[in-house]
Length: 243
Image 1: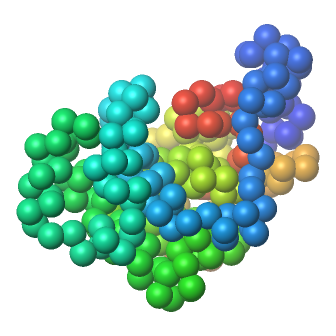
Image 2 (image 1 turned 45 degrees about the vertical axis):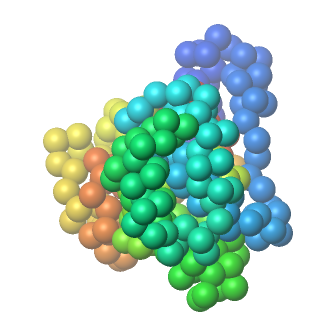
């Protein structure tokens, strides 16, 4: 495995030098402290999940432009109200031009409202659950998002966590290609079984290490056979700085 210094040097060369890389990193916010995440309303978690679901496979610019309409249509993403959405409201959403009228994604809003309502019943609030979940166990957190949420598997959930300020990694295409390049994973064999055989942990401080894992990853149907705990600042969902 390459050291962190080598990866950083590669990124600097690709982005025009050390100063240019530093300027790019400075554009991105650091992870929020646990207390701040806990104080975030569950409605904001539902709003971010919804935004990332609608952005997936679609123009982010269009969703950004329409977002005030989403906030109006879904009434500020009130979790309690949307969890018990009547059928007539769903039909109205399908005909409302203020939002993107994708039936399956609209249905995910209610499903994720129910998901967050259940987390709140279990933990006091959904925000407390996300805030207190260990950053060292993002795989477990992604498992929860995939199993209990709607359309929150893969990069969608990862990007939502990042945008909410949760310390987390994103398995971008560039990250996966970098793992293949350094022979950390086999690009020809990406089965779920392989995913559980080892875990890649990037110590933000300095060194890349491969840490054996006995934890099953049957939940993880992604391309990567290992998981990279990547620097918070290196990917913002739109632009990858290292590859």
